[in-house]
Length: 437
Length: 203
Image (cartoon, rainbow over the protein chains, first blue to last red):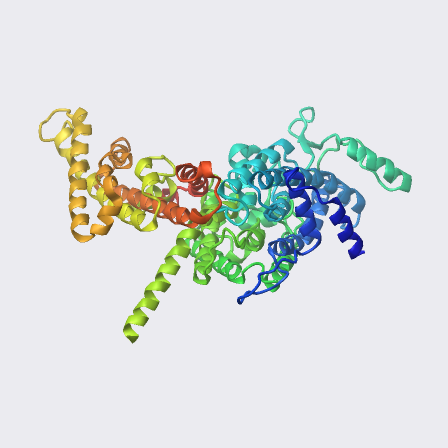
């Protein structure tokens, strides 16, 4: 099997001189299948199969559970809004297929655009394809709302890869997290498509005939194909759409509710266990807390991500949450109290249940390229992300969630933090050396 | 409390460089190394922190209608403000030359050019249009200077870091600095919109 594959690769190897683009693509797939056997000779170097590509694959592996649940949750949220199939396994095939129909185009567009640009640059600049985009391309679909127009996604990915990465010289050189840059691009360029209450549940549209009511959108051809298959099995089908949503549906996320009515406002709509297991509307992959924690532990055990950043980020956010709790006195709240004070009064440990804190902590902040790289620097970097993220989330009325912006903000300063830590270290050792002499 | 609010607002939320894009020329030119950027940043904090209160006093007691001359002389404000800024910069220049000749040599022409750094004059003009009082002016001067300092040391650290990166040849140097500034502005937008006064107002 292995021999056959190797032979196959050897036979199809294109000529590097004649067709550099083809050879780049070939090289990318070849090193994906086999670890390259060129190792450093002589000297004391660590010889290990754990190269860049394997490191990246570990991150992608850690995200797989989020993908599975995210796919299911797109469908589950859709049907929850319609008041159909309340149980976990009821209409399971419909939920899963609806999720797949939503997530697959996003995944394909993000990866085709991103990898296409990457391949082009690799051939143009004469280096091998670096697998940096594998991780970004896996992260990007998870942090997008399910109904995002695909051309917007393509534009944002192109922006992030060209301006955010290739301009800096490719994988490992970028200063800002590529996946977050693509999200922040949509966030500022097309804010109505990535914030507010209406974007987080897929295929629910306003219906003019029913007044201000929402109905499910007319399904496309993909749903029709699956309906045909399901009918063959005698299972329930999608139908034509146009089903009105349940009374009182708003599609608001826990954060939007908390910004208006504090923790009481959230618990009126969602239970704590729903938030913990992730059965709430939001970006595709960010919802299920246990699965993200599982991924985080996987990353820590394989030492791909640094536990210092995760721990310090939790500590920073917890400290900031306690400060906010201390600044307000819920006993003095009246009807007229502004939402921001009620948000501040949310118990600090419940801040972790809402929004994308854990996802940002596990997969975004720990990106070894953009994070601070000294150990002391990591503590400072993580703690500041935790604190600033909560500040943006609670105190900034312009944005619903803070971690994306907080991480980009601290990416800006990670080079400075490293520089300062190194300088401090040099000074300390210099002092010690002169004292000893 | 108002003092702290304005300081935070001018340093982080409405950063001189990254929100208003003021003071660009020395920001782009002197940010190649962290050491000189640090020195220039301190000089800007100093100049902003001193010229703005002085300009405020001049505006309030010499140029305004209820001032010393009893007539509206505010059309003279540009000339007088620049004169104050220029003399302040001279002072900084002499101090730097005396105590740190190495930094003086590294900063070169950009030290006297702080005079025409638009962040400095811009700060003085903002102070008038926003009708700050004296203590608010001091807070605005120090905060604006600190924000400028923060922006230039951050970009200098990044530029030092990417010195050995495989940046496309056409973008090396100034082109990269522009991209960096734009992306930093994007990151700084995270805090834009926070209103410290609302929070300080209490429940």
